[in-house]
Image 1 (spheres, rainbow, N blue to C red):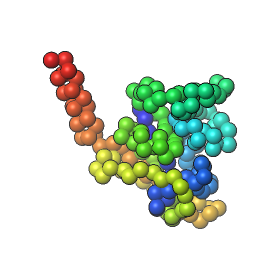
Image 2: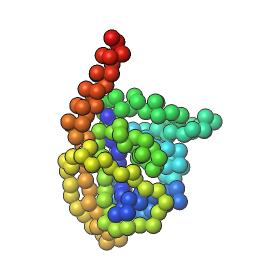
Image 3: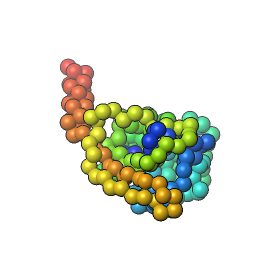
Image 4: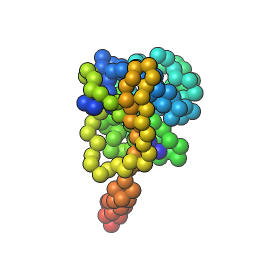
Length: 181
């Protein structure tokens, strides 16, 4: 199963200059608690913006550069979106963590969104794509204020609407049947 985890400002900003647009400790703790022990999938630029290998997480790094390698037992480099398919089909939850281009490409294929809505606008150069209306249903929500920064956060989890999932599966079955006939 594939999920996206992301923090989004009021103006849809998610990043600046190849990294996060902010440093909000309570959101970083949330990210750690949700992704701990899981596979995290990211683009090369996102990987390079990390402070290092994140503990107790398997890192999958997508890059077009075929010469790009990382020699670490908890990192796998892949070169195409097709290679993400195995993570989509897995029973365990795997997380897309960025960046902007990977979010845009994978949004139609994920089952769940973990969004931290940051209660202010931020200067940035990377934006989260528009979430199609009606494709996701809010399943859990809670608010917090970061003690250090005073920033208001709204943590929200969304699942892909079952009716849309069933409709897509039905369309795929019809396509398969018509190709067999």
